[in-house]
Length: 159
Image (cartoon, rainbow, N blue to C red; front, top):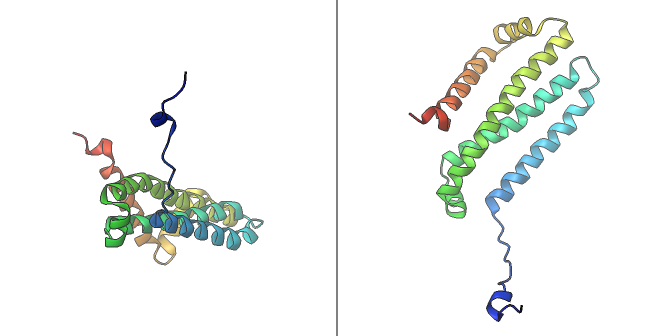
């Protein structure tokens, strides 16, 4: 059966570069690449693998958190390029990954420090929070991020 002329003619596919997505992807690739280059030499030391995983998770999680801040700030040219609805969708999609990556950083960095010092993981976590500079405020900020993440989750918002 022959197709009609209208059915067989499809308009050409037009590629449109989304500069917001392109910029975010290039930034993410730069963060991951530079992190790997600086972390790989330390993998052979005691706790090195766990510390490398923790540091990579910290860098990528922090980058995603910064992207969330940019999205929520509603920068005019980004909103014009992508649209508000798309920015909200990106925010909802990225947020859980950023929280998981920051939690991964806390877990694996603590494990790495515990392996290098020969202490237990919980004891090492306590030492990190109570004796290292700025770790107590970082721990409080981490807890607040997790609480806000759960509070803003769709299931938690449904009544």
